[in-house]
Length: 99
Image (cartoon, rainbow, N blue to C red; front, side, top):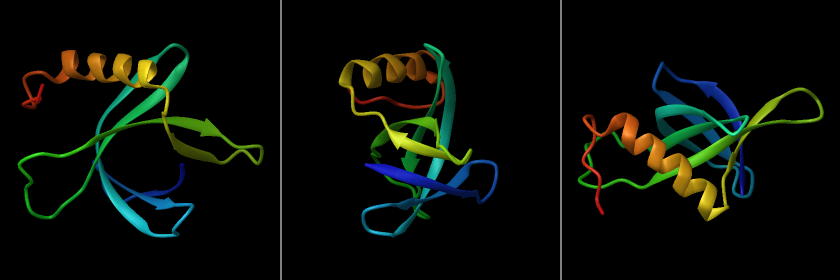
């Protein structure tokens, strides 16, 4: 699944459009991690009301043939775990992580 990068709503919110459904979804940008010559975005779906638990998504920036950039969900579990471990170590004081 790939999401087309539309625009930054503010400095922490990003609106993505799901290519399969065409629906726009707001995500909160938690961190950007440079690792293994790739740029990863760590995101969670944005809700106006605070949630007790939230899923975290790891996406990577991909450059298309026309020069545009898109965010693509990382599907390789080993890659996701490595990025998420880096995120946890960088942000352990900011978030409570469920084990």
